[in-house]
Image (cartoon, rainbow, N blue to C red; front, side, top):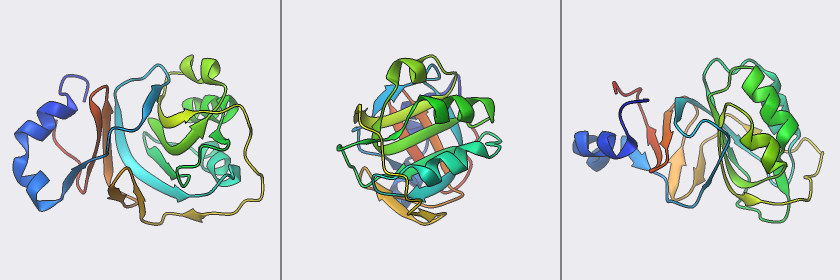
Length: 166
């Protein structure tokens, strides 16, 4: 993905866009982390103002995957912070996309991982462990399923039903 942009992928695959196999997320995410370009198979998680399951996922080996978290779009607290992002980087995750907030931005920006989120917020999340793993989620106007592929760069984020040859 380093040499081909998301814009070029869109231009080269109009049939996949028309069929819905290739979708673009609405441009609502801010860019964090040192890795501005990342891609990988998607793992989905749905939580609300609770980060226990987020941390649990990132403690696993990432194997180049991208964790996509539907945090309900909450702007009332951060569901991802610096420590879990460092752990994700060390465990081989390619990236994390959060439909919610992050904190410890300076620490996250020092990590060699791609992170997208709506905003930053200083308050921490709850620790109840409530949420759903590996479920279809809808964020930024797009339905995303476990096992699909995510491609992100400075132009935006694409979701594909299949791995694209780029």
